[in-house]
Image 1 (cartoon, rainbow, N blue to C red):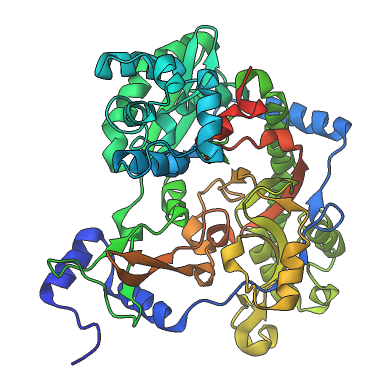
Image 2: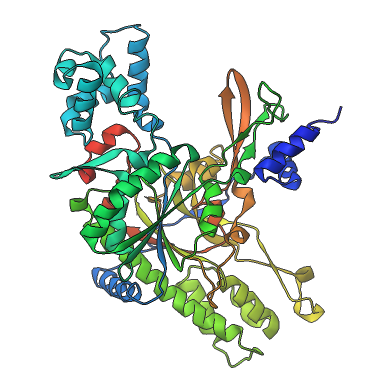
Length: 536
């Protein structure tokens, strides 16, 4: 019997999800063949690929951006991936909850994470809500329950019955406490967006959410939007999107057979945050800020964030405008030897970090013009990087990649069979999962990294004529990876699409800028809310 043969019902399932047969077969083939590891050539460091800005330069860039965002018609969007559930944030508390529920060791000492949580419970922004919810649902006083080590009803109220925090997305959790009440992570993005991403009286916010949380999300937006419009004197345009079913990937067994559920249906899994390149591609925007939902500081600790957000945007404008000027001349007509080819090459290498060879200047004019046009006519992103202080996250590296450029068809202008190589090295954000850790040379480069990626990006997504790029054209599909999981005792393999700021943006023009660590205040566990960036 033919391996992984599809039935009529299988084809109907693919059609319903919007997945073409070719894409499906390609995924099955990729499980068989695997994906190559990233080929690191060097760490990107402060003197090799990461720009450092003087205070005066920061202020000049901020001034340029502030002038831009006041222009009529400038569409600036704050794009916030916010679909993840908060379950992992409460991993340690769930372990204790399940232990107590099973009554295995009710009086066992708490582990460090749980002890920290209960020792500092009054300092969490959701303390008042938890206290009221526990009283209403179980008739218990929170402080008394904690003092008497009666943890089970407290955890049940927090995670499951009363507040249900274990099932909510991070966007809807109370993150920060102020004198006039606690606010959710989503609300803090309303506030932050008003402070650096608003134009003349308007602010565009876009959240990616899960379908199951859509009603709760919309209800919360309707409740808080008037408050923030009044506070900041502007109008919000709040949009949302969900991950498209067509970006789901098939799961397979350890033998690469299609994994099916109890009804014989093909099992698909979400393709990871790389699937959001589709959502980003659908935006109507000139400039897009990207920042994760949980990386949001309390208002009184936000000054560095606001400063560098504006500086990154000013740098993007500066480099984009110069690039657009070159592209306009390259597309203006017959290329000439009188054009400033050397200056353009220096600009690409020194200011855009695109490693090009002087050999380009020896090429025929038509090929030279077409090649430089292709190299420069791409989406552009400026990414903040912070010093690595042991936090998990992808890092900035120089990566060797084999990419090709289509040359003109005329024989005299088409060496290498009509193909020319792109720059062999480019700046990329690389995750640990993309590294061959068994390769000593690659591991040494990875371990020597000085910075990591806090997911702080500013993006230009239109070309020099004002048309939107199709961002799907700039994805490197070979940067996906395969994860091994267990489902009901069966070992399966799942495919993660190229990450949104990793392989999904592999062919963008990329600039890295060093930022202070204060811009990075993620909440990966509930106890992270006790960190300085989240407390008054």
